[in-house]
Image 1: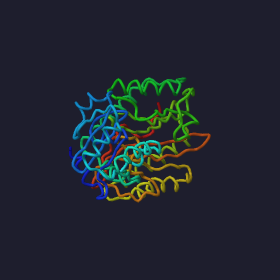
Image 2: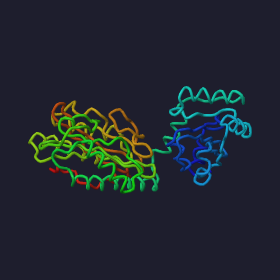
Image 3: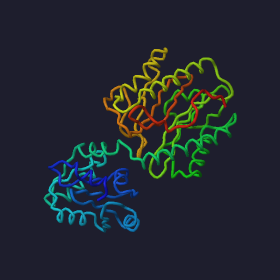
Image 4: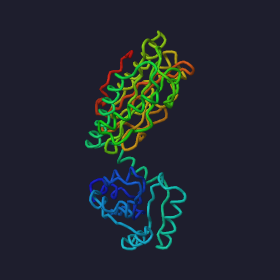
Length: 358
């Protein structure tokens, strides 16, 4: 087994002889292998990756730290492994198993005299392993961020009055892929005018016009790892009210970033940004969390919210993304990803955040 699988095996509770992992992200995390279907069975001494014919050759060449089992019948291969390893109890990946999938596994286990353990225990163990990023993971996220920034910089030069939101979003995705991204982190958010008051607005037929804010909430996917960044720009001209709202968010984000360090509570980072916005006269206009973890998934632990008592640790990667949203008028959000350090954070975003008029 590789180091990450050995650590997982060592953390399994005494009553569990093995763990069964089926989520794409966690299989990739532990084995480095990408597939849309597969089963990772981890005992306290060995790990097995079960895949069907479609992935057999690639898995044998690329999966790390595990024995690859190419099955023609999953039930038969699983039964054989359970018997050979004398497995009596299997801890299931609670967040990944549907009711139907859990029932199917239980039918196999019942024939072997084996019980499944269905709770959040395995998810918590894996979460603690994934929440702190390795140097390799940070490098991949940094690469995804650089692709995102270059694509946005190139796209901004092309924007002109009358362009449609969805065309700008398409151009951004094209540039990201051309720069080496394997995909986009999520459906890109490129919205303008009144739609910027919607935190997760969808690019559509709206055409860019003078006086609009344009919000870009975007990210690239690189070797399985995501980036996440938001910038808000003015187009052509900007009103005094827009300046005031923008500068309030700008200052709130600075305060949020300054609160980030190992040992800080997530809720205190949230409060640093949120309290400033509330005290500036925009109480109730910032309705989402201040941030979240980023990695193999675009939203990971920890959640940087008012209710989170999670203690930040060095090596975590989180976003800091306060905003102000005025329905029927406009909205502003600014978002950076940062790596938590002992005495602060390293900001992975390099693009300027001062108000820019395109």
